[in-house]
Length: 116
Image (tube, rainbow, N blue to C red; front, side):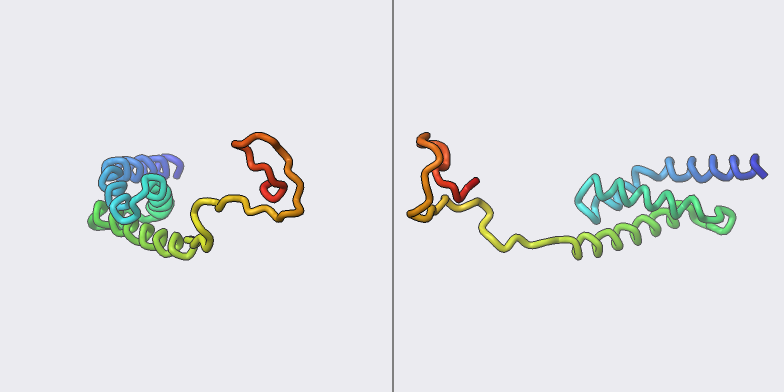
């Protein structure tokens, strides 16, 4: 049993490594991020590790299909996580209240307590 499992793992690994560049390209083209593409490849490997290789006719196509579906799932997840910033991108100048004391005499430092 152990030798069969080791042989299966070696075969699965060899097939995955042989197509890894293609799979990375597919994921990267869909996601636009190398980090997200690597995450998709990890998920693809986990799915691939659970597949009965004897039942797969075209291993390359099967791996591309797993990768594509994982990338689509990742896109949906990233779309939900995306947050929009409601304020301006740069902080506005400090507009101190007239009664707040000055905290610094340096002209380059913010001199008002509101920006602590």
